[in-house]
Structures are given as structure tokens and as C-alpha cells.
Length: 193
Image (cartoon, rainbow, N blue to C red; front, side):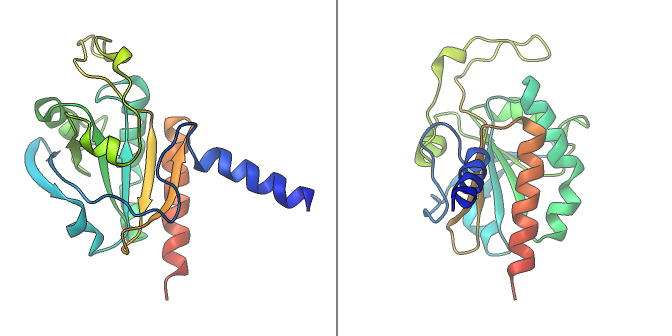
């Protein structure tokens, strides 16, 4: 019994972020946002993508940030594996669309593989119960460019076609976040009839 409790506690440590966020079984708020794919702005509607399969909705602090760049690159590298598992990916940050247009097309980051959505007013982040940290406003990104917005903790939600959260991943480094998201969608895909 003690062993089972220890395993459950260790799993929850990597599945749930330290702050309050939506958890497994919660309804994921639907959203429509301006997004960039391949350097071009477009409208992103979560509900449309959920009709085709689960969606990995990952929140990150800022485009061109240290960990954010690693995470975007990892998602781009593993894009085909997510697609093979039937899952789509969308990144969400408080960046404006011009910044995301640069980030989405950059070959070292998103590499035009998946959209990144602008949540400049933080509405989407707050709907997913993520806190906005304004103390990070004014920091510089990897390029030395000042960031003019706050940030949210790196948190990934895997949302099922029923609109419910399958898993919440937080509190791990960027590469581990992507690897664990892939594990979840592959497991979810293999569980489908």
C-alpha cells in the first residue's frame, strides 16, 4: 500500500504544476485566438482541432526565451510522432502576433510545424487557471530583445476530443515536458478502440 501511494505521489509531481491549474477530468476552456504558423497570422479555433483528435495545449513564458526555445524545438522535432499518435499541438504565450510570426517560422524553434497563439491579454491563461507573473516584464530574451509582457509557468494540457483535460504537465524542464506529453498522447492513442 505504501509503495502504491509513493508511486501515485511521484506521478502527480510531474503531472501537476506547483500552482493551481486545470487537472485531469476538468473541462478545458475552448478558445479562439490569433496565431502564427510558418510566419503567417491566422485564426486558431481549439474546437475545430479537437474534432480531429486530442490537442496538446502548451503554455510557455515567452517566444525566444531560453527554456521556451528548447521546448518549441523539441515539439518541432517530435511533431511527426505527435501526429502519428493523432494529436495536434498549439503553443500559447502572452507574446503579440508579430513576435510569434518570427518565432513560428524560425528553423531552430517552431520550424513552421505547429501554430503558436497570442494570448496578449492573458485571458486564455487565466481560463486555464494559470497565474500571470508581471515581475518578468522587461526581461531580455535570447536575442537580447526586451520582452514587454508578463509570463505564465510552463504548463502543458493534453485535451481529449471530449474537451476534457487528459493530463496536466508542469514543474519539469522543457525537454521533459515534451517527452511526457508525447508519452501521454501515445498512451491515449493506444487506448482508443
